[in-house]
Structures are given as structure tokens and as C-alpha cells.
Length: 159
Picture 1 (cartoon, rainbow, N blue to C red):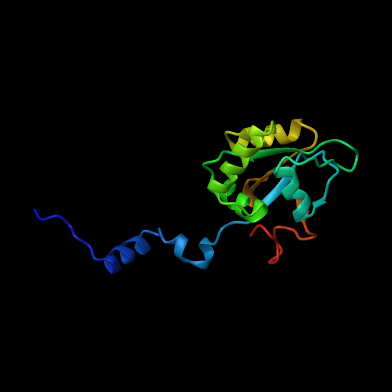
Picture 2: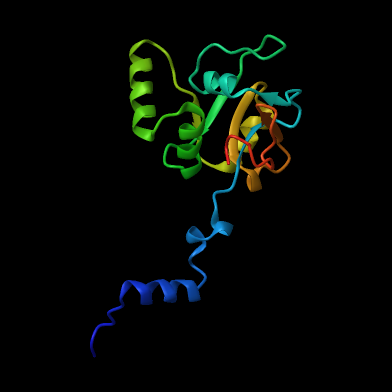
């Protein structure tokens, strides 16, 4: 029996027939990333600049004088990479170098949650905790607008 050898075009047709081409279609476009806090939070909005400062662990207080507590998804998360590129304007490598430099200066990076479920629990229980999730994973968390735009807005910065 001879091995099955497919040309590129044949492989794409086969994948399309199996429904595995979402990456190539507009319907497969990346889901918006929602910036979220616990449902009890009084915050409704952040600016891009303030969000960037929060996740660079620069001193950023809430309106009531408390500190924001940034919580990242794991470094291997695709959503984390998109967030870092969109908010921090850094690639994963640049982000890693930034935090190496900051550790040498005595600054600590944001904590990372190992799962979406853990992240949701932390956000609900820790006052001032702020993070990000794919919009479909938000559940009962409070979604913040960024620069006055909601994730459903076509001009939302984390689309």
C-alpha cells in the first residue's frame, strides 16, 4: 500500500471539508479580549494608558485610593500574547526582558493565574484585581470599557 501524498490544495480542501478552516475565514477572527474586574467592583472604564500602567506594575490607584492588582493569564496563553501586544505594545520576548529588568530593580511582575476558573475566583474575591479574558469567558465578571468603548464596539482596542 502506497502512502497517501496530498498536494497543498488537496489538503486545504480536506481540511475545509472537516470544518477546520476557521483560522482562514472572517468568522474565525480573534474574539475580543474583555478587561474585567469582580462583579462587585464600582469601576466601569479605564483608559488605555491607565491599563498599560497597571499591567506594567507602575503605581496606579483606584478612584477610592486602593491599588489596582493586575492578574495575568499564563505566559503561554494566546490571549495573554494578544493582550501584551495590544496593551503593552510588547512581544512575549520584550515582555520577558522588561520583567527581568524590573526584577533587578526590585519590582515584581503581576501574578499569573493558571486557569480561567482560578482567575475568575481571584477577581471576585480580591478587591482591585483586574485582568482580561476572551469575551465569551467573562461570565458574571464586570467588563470595563477601554477609552470609552465596549468589546462589542468595532473600534474597541482589544479586538
